[in-house]
Image (cartoon, rainbow, N blue to C red; front, side, top):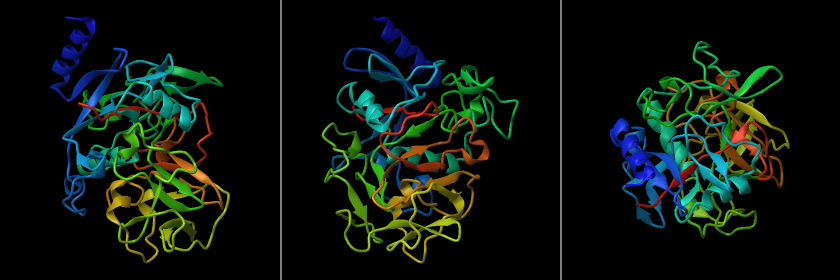
Length: 348
């Protein structure tokens, strides 16, 4: 039995099977959390009883999928999920995607749908995770601290992956997904906003190696009020408008600006429109009216701009950080010491 087999058996035994170790195509390990298939109604009782899109790939359903337990590091241009590491940062969207896909077939950057499913699960189960959102500590619980892994100006910035207490895990337990609140914000795949228009790669199809997320790709789809997917730029597609200092859905934008503006996620407005279930499943619009924290939804809907999501907040985001927090103002080329990522796996 190899050392990696021993490692996997130990991880599975200690977690009761909720964690496992997956090897990439060169035999290097990542610690992964196993997510069994959920109906959307199981994740939020206001949603329909259909399989959540995070478990749909290439028109088929997955019984389970895997997400990195830890924010990823990069070794030899490949992404890995390992504990007690300084998370990778200063990486743009395309390079994060490439580091995940370099691991082999069915490896990819965390789909927006999967992040949305986890956020909904946390809210429904009352385990909204805390984290490194105030220079190494949680802003509301300053005694909760992680192990410093990167500092500047005499202050802790990043903390080592998984080094915080159980309350920093998605289920508030030792086996949970770590650091979804703060530390480094995380790029997610399969979602963008272009000049305010909401565009997606359907389901979790961004995990396919053939999925094209380039700027001009025809794989991107816009959304109508009834949830129908259409080509970007068609009439009456859903967009984000900024009205009375709050983001709201619209089919015509009245306030478009090349500016990073925000409101609390829980305060987003429907603008009198029907909100399709897909937006709630992706956690880019509230599924219901209560139970959220004070996570912020930042957006730039400037004309002609392509903006990609980074989620969860940063080490300095304080109460604006959290699993429902989003920043949709970064172009794909953006990179900073406060932005990282994690990989997912949709194979067997």
